[in-house]
Length: 119
Image 1 (cartoon, rainbow, N blue to C red):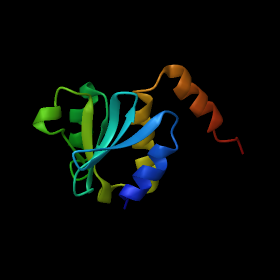
Image 2 (image 1 turned 90 degrees about the vertical axis):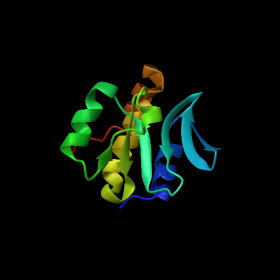
Image 3 (image 1 turned 45 degrees about the vertical axis):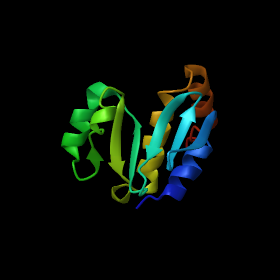
Image 4 (image 1 turned 60 degrees about the vertical axis):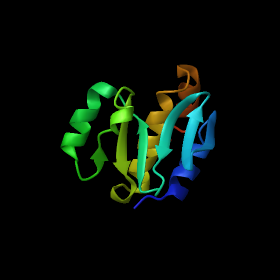
């Protein structure tokens, strides 16, 4: 089960990511772009995700993923129940959401730095 502490640790380590508190909600931005946000009760995390793929993601695992709230449907956004993911999956979701918001050269440099050594 992932927690807000896991989200903070993962997101804060990403280049250019900044944590903000907006209307009592924790959000992470790259510049002015929000790439993830936690619900007020910290049980659900919204994150950047390709709009054209979200219905498939939610349909494949409805116990884990949720469509965005109606006010967020116009954005490339989807939500996940934190209790339904482990740290490895959370890291992948957060990092992929961040990649959607940073320049490609920043994401490429991060990927090179964090590539696993063959072995």
